[in-house]
Amino acid sequence: MEATIVPDNVKHYPVLLKEIISVISPQHGGTFIDCTFGQGGYSKEILKYKGTKVIALDRDSDTQKVARTIYDQFPDRFLFKNLKFSNLNNLKLKNENIKAIIFDLGYSFTQIKNPRKGLSFNSIGKLNMQLGLNDFTAHDVINKLDESSLYKIFKYFGDEKEAKFISKNIVNYRKTKKIDTENLVKIIDKTKRKKNFKVHSATKIFQALRIFVNKEISELIYGLINSAKILKKDGILAVVSFHSLEDKIVKSFFKNITTSKSFSRYEPIIEKKSFSFEMPVKKPIIPSKNEIDENPPSRSAKLRYLVKRDNNYDIDTNIEEQFYKLLEIENLSSKL
Ligand SMILES: C[S@@+](CC[C@H](N)C(=O)[O-])C[C@H]1O[C@@H](n2cnc3c(N)ncnc32)[C@H](O)[C@@H]1O
Image (cartoon, rainbow, N blue to C red; front, side, top):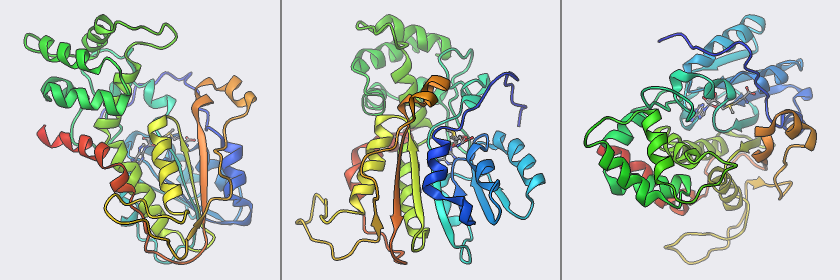
């Protein structure tokens, strides 16, 4: 793999760090799974407490460099796996009493500043957007998928109001020339009639492409289901989300496994007898004004958490049904 080209002055801030630590209380020791290792902000903080062990995952193999430095310091208490969190159940955890599983969704500042990943609309060259362990790139999506699929991706994953005209213009443009990052930004900018001068006109399309390329909907749904299964009594599931689509899935899943009604479209409403999970705080925990002043992108972060109340490993959820439309759109990648 090529070397990562990241400017040295890039600073990474672990979002809601104090709040995460207060929710998972590592001061009492135990094993923690950090599903989104990134620059290791959460893992390093947990390891400061004696008696803790961290199993960290990240799909981006570039994060292994930081993981190696932590491993050198804590060889008996730290383990890193280059793995997607939807595959959490592939970890051999039989003898581990997992105290908490944490997710800090999305991508890090280090990744967005890496021109090779092409996550930013300021990147130059071939479209990419892969975080790691992917099957296709944003270049494939923009240059190969049909107009109607592009429309659905932009509308449902980016909530882009002008999705129809943007997809039409993409398909017209690529008849003569392949589309790279700069062309895509120009096509979007020229097409959009309604401009919001505070937000870059390509923001929503880039978000939609990133979600699609990284299959973020199924990653999140199966990451949550598998975490809920793995946890034992008193285990905590904590999730930091950044955009409304992520938060909607987390909120629905948490509600789904803690409230007393079945939400199936096909079955009558059924009272469930007992619930393995409790949501101690209904409202999400959000960053303080100080944190937002220091790290403005943290302003959209929301932390939600659950506590498991028994050792039941069968999770009764219909979250896949609730989000079947989004999962169907994700499956449009089978056309590539
Ligand atoms: C916001 S960053 C995490 C930052 C981290 N909490 C820290 O303090 O350094 C999100 C990380 O999750 C990783 N990631 C995103 N989706 C993933 C997935 N499905 N499986 C594993 N890692 C994922 C990204 O590669 C990125 O490194």
